[in-house]
Length: 170
Image (cartoon, rainbow, N blue to C red; front, top):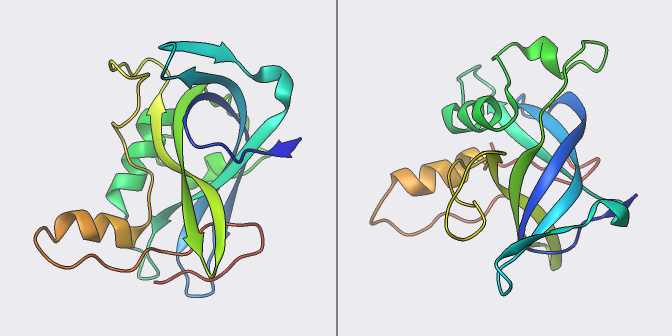
């Protein structure tokens, strides 16, 4: 499987999951997605990409170090892939057929490198005129705070999620 490096809207099937904890105690749900289809905004249609073997992994930070719920991430996971709120669902030994969903990716620069990351997580049946993006954000706590602090200078972007990275800003 190859890492997705394309920005766009995709239909994706979650294929892996695990709980992870940052060095500061933030709890996250790391989800691996295999790309099934890509939305072509020019042709305004979905194109099959399943044979390309592309995947992307993203960590949705769900609890702060003080055990405070990160509500927007809970909502994204519940509506996007049917999480019930039970942390045991992220244990691979627990049976859970995660449904196909829609994701939107973006590029993010961090320490001079550009990474492709999941920007949005939506249920498969989410619809909009442009391929179905932009309903539920699965983003970091800092980005959620940015949206809440309207009218103030933007905060610096969080570091990207990458395997082995424990550089979490909170």
